[in-house]
Amino acid sequence: MSTDQLIRRNILSGSTAVYVAPEGSALPSLSATPIPDSGGLLPFEASGTNAVQLLFLDSATGGTYTITYNDDQGVAYTTASLAYNAAGSAIQAALELLAPIGTGGVVVTAGADHVITFSGTGTQGRPQSLMVLNTGSLTGGASAAITETTAGTSIWQSVGLIENGVTIAYTPTFEDKFVDASDAPIDSFRTAENLSVEYEMAEKSLKHLSLCMDSATYTVINQASSQIGQTTMGVGDGTSLMVALALQGRSPQGKPRLFSFPKVKITAPTEDKNAKGANNVTVGYSVFSDISKAKGLRLFQYFDMTGDALA
Image (cartoon, rainbow, N blue to C red; front, top):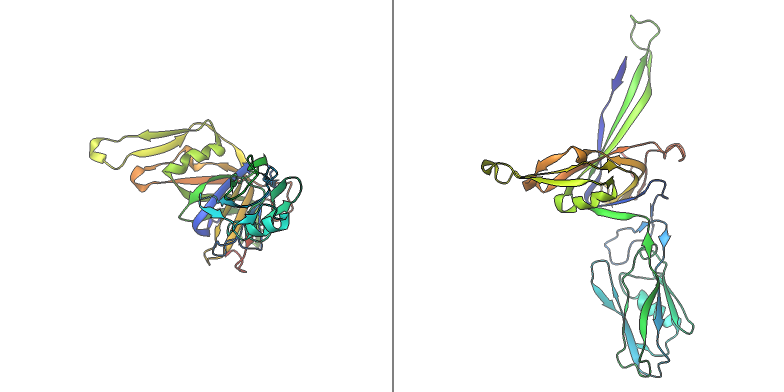
């Protein structure tokens, strides 16, 4: 006789960032160093291309200038004034004083032009907005500018931000072992296991699920006038893609936590419809075993700063 046991756990609470990448991508990790000015959040780190920008001062002969950096939210941060002939180390130090960059966030290599590489914690392996050169009192540098020589890229793309946490459902199947059919079982052993991930996503973010589905459609169905406020939205058609999934947020204990799944397929939105007034649609993924990973890491891996085991 076989039996199934459903185990559900809330693995992330509150705001959680959702990322996907092509199947087979290197799984991300959490740095041990908090993102500067982030309230202790740890940066999402994964392989990618570091952004490189070039500071060209065009033979400036005097005066000062500043550099403005815009963070992911479009908030501008401007350095203190720099002399026209400031050394690369001075430029790097000025940029590192900007909260979103922080110590070690950039490396400035001096030369005919100054090469600025975003290669530190919280800045590496992702796109960066082009910094702005404020020429101020700079003289003799008519064509001074900052240009991008290498665009920062990440293999992980953001699906969106969710607010109500993430739940996993684990269902192992056990087979009883008997000596005699008339006796009680002497043992049981696991013969199969199923793992799924679920969360709720705001309707306005559903378009991002195209990263997980090929040719998906998003349909709004207006109900009868007597059902005002019960307009439904469904996600259907298309083909679910096998992707890698990463979920970055906080554990129920409030500490930084990152879950990553090497192989998942989206499931629930192909069938789910909900009341539009609820503003959320349940999104679910089936988790598959990746036999290329070491035992114990084939379904998922996680980085946790709580010191507590998953309970």
